[in-house]
Each structure stands twice: as C-alpha cells, then as structure tokens.
Image (cartoon, rainbow, N blue to C red; front, side, top):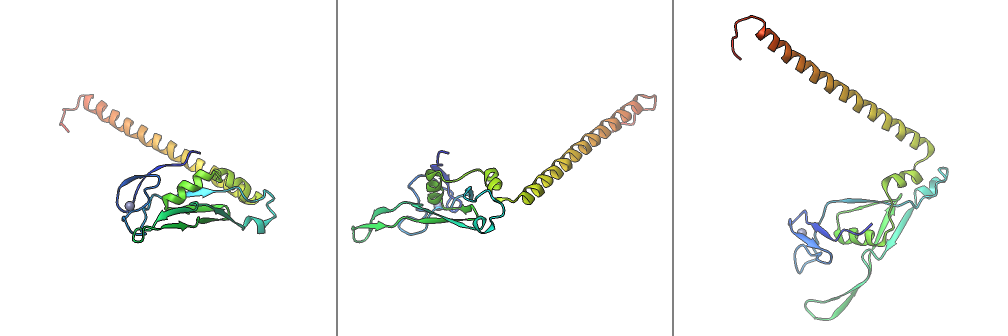
Length: 172
Ligand SMILES: [Zn+2]
C-alpha cells in the first residue's frame, strides 16, 4: 500500500505533510493523528505453537536514522533510527511519522490475514459463529423494520379510508 503522506493533527487541527512533524515548532512536541492499527502475519499457522503466536517482532528504521541541525549550536546531529514492536502481530500508533514509515516498509497485512495466522481453529470457529449470529440479528432487525413500516403504511391507509368512508371530516 502507498503510505499516507498528508494528515490532520488532532491537537492543533493543522493539515500537514510528510516531514512536517512538529506540532509546536522548536519543541519535541509532535503532531498527533487518528490512531491506526497495523497487523502482521508473523505467526506460524500451526495453532499449537502458542509460544510463537505470543511473540514480538521488532521493526527497525521507524523512522530511519536522520541528521538534523542543532538549533542552538548549528551543528549536525545524528538521530538514531527508531524501532516499533509488534506484539502478537499488532501495533497501533497516533504518531504520523511512525505510521508513514510502517506503511513505507510494507511489512503489514490485513486484519483478516492476521486472524488467519493468529487464531486457533477453535477461535476461528467461534469467530465464524459470532459472525453468523451478527448477520442473523441484522436480518431480524431488517425484517422488523420492514414490518413496522408496513404497519405504519396500513394504519395511514386505514385512516384515509375511514376519512373517505362517509364520516364527516374533522380535520387533522
Ligand atoms: Zn499538531
């Protein structure tokens, strides 16, 4: 996926682009954006391997090492690269620079793929059952809404028929 390169800060409300990370210029306060969840299919698909499924994966160069100019001394300062840790294949962040570099490295997968490799056969079965139950509940709601609507239409029709049926019109 192409990394997102434009964001809106939740603190200052500014729209900013890739590289414009500072929220309060000249400080270490950086923009904060809407949280994003990232998933990784780093677990073996063998569901009995629980130790491996509880593992952590370190993603380096999030962000990569960079050289900045120190504002007071004017000297070039090397800032070492960052590391983010995926725990059980999941990492979330509101830091746009981390979001950019995770997306840039292309190490993530969809949540569905993550479930595929992380969930045991039983968990998958439960999830599928939950999904069926949710769909049934949704279908029942839709039927109820349709019936309610039909009842309303019928009531209105009955009222109109009653009004036309010879009784003096009383007005609404
Ligand atoms: Zn900001």
